[in-house]
Amino acid sequence: MSEESIGYVYMRVADQVEAEIRSGRLPKGARLPNERDMGAQYGVAPGTARRAVQELRDRGLVVTLPNKGSFVIVDGPAGANS
Image (cartoon, rainbow, N blue to C red; front, side, top):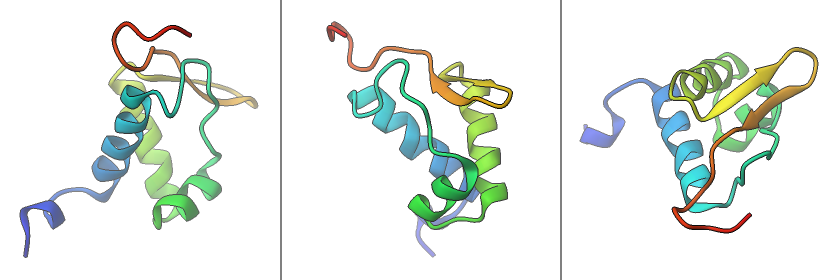
């Protein structure tokens, strides 16, 4: 068993999304996919995607607006112009 496979799946998904935010692929203001779509994108159950979004909120990277979705609230690469 590799070190990569140890740990919670939702944390791995959250880490992947954070990497996309930090790289600028998901810019400030971008809407995250809904739980079903995110689950399909990352190969996880919708509940796992929901927990990953919760983790991203805890990290201060996204905000979730009821009936609107979850949105990136931080800039990507340092010094990037939006």
